[in-house]
Image 1 (cartoon, helix red, strand yellow):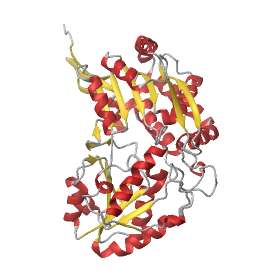
Image 2 (cartoon, rainbow, N blue to C red; image 1 turned 90 degrees about the vertical axis):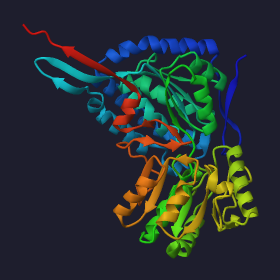
Image 3 (cartoon, rainbow, N blue to C red; image 1 turned 135 degrees about the vertical axis):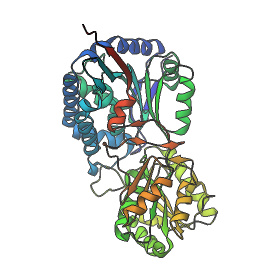
Image 4 (tube, one colour; image 1 turned 180 degrees about the vertical axis):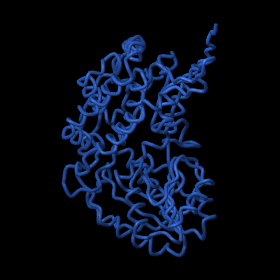
Length: 462
């Protein structure tokens, strides 16, 4: 029986969009068509594939006004921020610019006697399972290098942002990328798992929850399919004694509360050197108090609703439990009258917290952050590592040597100094522990979506 997938808008709780999920047989046929088309796509000149992908990004930019409006309806981000076009264009442009170098053979010997080199070949068919929180940028991380490298792609988006894949596919097809090279699909979890178990794909990239990542791993068990996982996060920030206090407050609070806290590398816990703790807390509360929670289409709104009521319920539960266990909330709820007990959730800063509290251990993915004092760098390192996740960490200090030394001991995928909540496309986006495995962006992002092939060619001499 056909299943209807529905996007419930956090703006007003109404059904904003709905689509019929593909049947298992139709999905299998589509995957087979992608596999059949892949060799011819890979045979096209690299310059041609790059040009087509760049044209697809350009077409998507032409849809900006529509995309920004749809994003607000689907997941609540205020329209004042203009969608995700800045980051999307930066990542796509960089990955296109390094493609020739990243995909070039690694020549070991080229002499009269031998040609020895390691070439990169596309893996085949790539399945991208994308999240709702940054639904354009997260897709671009894998889609652009996958297509440029010569793979074909099936894209499945989160139901919460179901129109995003349609828009990307519309733009890329209009630019000339063949439909049998890139397909957006609507699938149930069951059909997705069936396809993965049947070896329909050669690489799967999943961004989502830890539970979702485990389900993907189980579905792929025994298939030897390549896998990239970006899962949960509980990213910490540390304000050292020599930090620029105002810059740290501005950077870390924006990192904690932007996009209603729904950022993969958002700041979820902050540790402050005792000498700066009181001043940091006071300034952080003042910073957050200036936010305006409200309808994402209103120009004054800086904080929209969370993407779904059930997501907000999780965060409310963490806050309530922490307060019951002795945490102190710093923000007056009356400052945010739009909080309706549903998807619209007032931001909150908690002090007097500890690592026994869920809000300091479990992923929140919402507009809440806990702040703790620490006596020195050693205590900060221990606290930052006391976590099941490892995506990014943020160190605020005037001393690069301090940040580098601490970074070597921190269990994380990225070490930031004096910034946070940002993806540099020239660096590998990766994590450790329950945050997942693999990596995207940078030269290594191309390596993830290709396989090495070695050539050892002995030349005949007369």
